[in-house]
Length: 513
Ligand SMILES: [Zn+2]
Image (tube, rainbow, N blue to C red; front, top):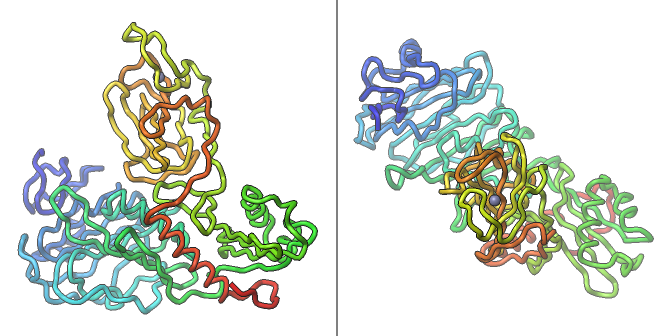
């Protein structure tokens, strides 16, 4: 701990203790940030800490110890910030002093609402209110519509940057990587919501830090979609649940119905489905049943998101043996189609982690450095330093960092006891807890740890036993269990209900669900 500023931040480069005159040196450009604040009149006696300028700041880094406070910051080149005056006698480590959360408006520079974060800490009243009024991203929201004081923890506003997924925006606000990943998964599994559009303001409610080192727990988050409805993410016992308010017709799932006819794919397309969606449904069904066994009079029901993303497909067969399939991302990060019993359909194919050739296979070999014969528990791929390494299957990052002789290593759990590791990396691009899709970049090839030159050492194991990745092209279907299965069934009910209330694109007689 080199002289950290205990009042405003934990930046080691700040180099000062306490809110001195020179407090708040920007760690990126070294300039002081405080004068800008003073010009805005937000400094004296208000417990306001702010860092404006370039770079990304974690709200975490602004403990705002004890009192009310506002931290605002913006990413590079984004207009910064203005904050309302947080009023009250604020003394560090002395909470519940702030009586009044009053402000008239939020100043926005350059008329754009962007990467802005507002942290408000402390006072005593009431729960987080439900937002009523529509806040357009371009307009500065009146603070009165923004928040009343929160009982515990902090309320932050985070602007979504272009191309930024919600979990990364949340991490900027100080949400732990694991929780941010859970939120993204909840949204991915939600019926209506998608990743918020750039410029969307995300309101994040964080709880009290359980200890000094831990990230603050996420209590809830909400944002408005571009269509004007409100998405809320709330903490549940097992994870996070998404709720939508004020959905417009355009945001609701769509339902397509018809009879199988001579050709299921053609019939799906004839019902109005986009070709890609129709193909996705047919592929999912084909992995489970023989399409040749279908009769022309069998009926189908397909549900898609407004984007066309498949939500559910169901076949009602005159001969019995109907089937419903739904794509689902489990807590292990794996996305597949599952039936009502939670049985997965598609087998998982292993993707090559790097394009390079195999330089050393799986099995006993003479170790190039240690000089004796020993088991090589993985496969080496030759590749130039800096070559991107991608996840071979969907999964969740279990560890990412230095791991002895393996050097920089990323470890991914794929569910069902299946684990893959990627070693000797020169750079790591993922954090523990993050969900990754097959093909997502994990980092770059390097020669860190016990290594003679740039290569990727890739290991695959199931239940702790090493598997030769080259001998196995794919893994069999996965089965949901535990809370995953509960969550899955709940969502299937939601999709069914949504399908029942949705207006079909091609009106026909209602199908009973
Ligand atoms: Zn190796």
